[in-house]
Image (cartoon, rainbow, N blue to C red; front, side, top):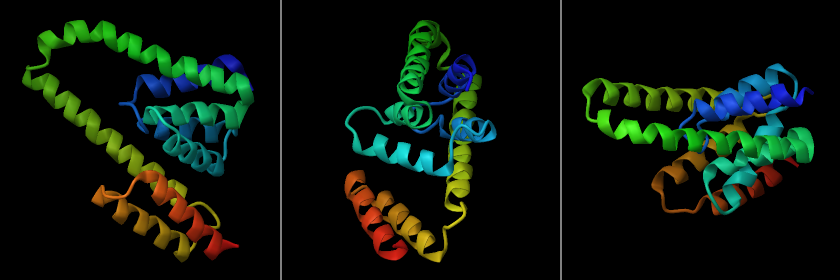
Amino acid sequence: MNPLLYFLIFLKASLFSTGGLGNLPSLHQDLLANGWATESDFGKAVAVGQITPGPNGLWVIALGYITYGWLGAALALAAIIIPPFIVLLVAAGYSKIEHHPAVRGVMRGLSLAVVGSLLATAGSLISAPGIDWKGWIIAALTVAVGLTNRVHVVFMLLAAGAAGYIFFQ
């Protein structure tokens, strides 16, 4: 594994995302294409990121650790720290143009593209080998409960894990 290329993949994903899970589709595509991660690695990393305190984007550090050990975690951390510093620089100029209709349109389009990419990646993860109708039911129930915003994500993960244990043992 080339550490520089690994870092650049994480940096690219972080630069062109909106935070949280926004970099998931890019990382998913690039790491799988290079054979540096598996579908399971992404599931584990997102689960760790959801149950740990702090920003949602920290799942990337877990993915770095899972796929490349401590060096991967350090490279992933560096890659997700650089973009916010760039944003601080851009924010100074953005406040002058944010009310322009073209800028609003670009931002809305980017947000919708991120949602589409996340849905495509979710479809890829749920279509992984070994996921049958029981997996689809767990996923659908988790989405339905998640949309209510009444159950904390930790409890949804615990319930889904328990259901997985019961259905797939």
